[in-house]
Image (cartoon, rainbow, N blue to C red; front, side, top):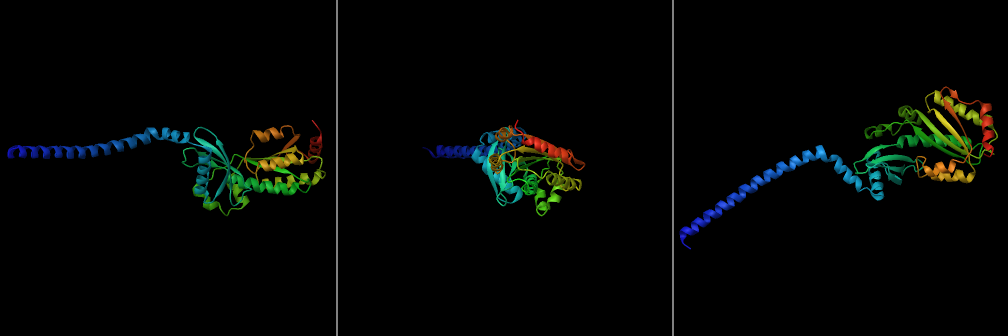
Length: 285
């Protein structure tokens, strides 16, 4: 090969390398522009589809871990997840208890894509357990065994930023801040046992006084005539579930029942009516 041909070949090589380098340079710039454009468009149009894809991957095992993580991040403590089950295509329910107090069982709703908490009933759960213990302690004066379950209605959502300011609140302060519209109370007793109607009724008069002082919620009370075995089953059931489900409803549907209201304005039945209804509670259907 002549010297001139070699020189021409070297020049062609230099040109080719230059073209490749320029192409590579502009290719990197173009890729960067396209990547940024895709990121912007994905935020605008693909956020929900991506969430749906992640939610599609939800399993019971991943749900338990997501619930633990979301609650720990919000409250700064460890939680036990008793059960998880689907609520909707995008979120799920978790039945939970704090490790520090397993008696408090509450419900939380968690996003299935792992992005955190929708809402939870931890604070109402604390309140419910306090009210349950007070009622249980009183009714155990008249019955060998009792079942008491409190549900909150019209509750208030605690945001993560508020958690620290609430840690040392009293029950009364919680109640005032929660501003719940009503609390529903299921009570299971063996109606054959209760004899002192006057003292039992007087307890609800004292609760009415607390309500009028804004230290308790208006109460809708339902008594069920249950034998000790059913009471025990109900108590065990609510060590895992915060709310009533089909199994519980099917268990109590055959029980005789009586109900009344206890509000700041008074009790919806008189003491004599309370006694009559308790006597009716004993009768077979």
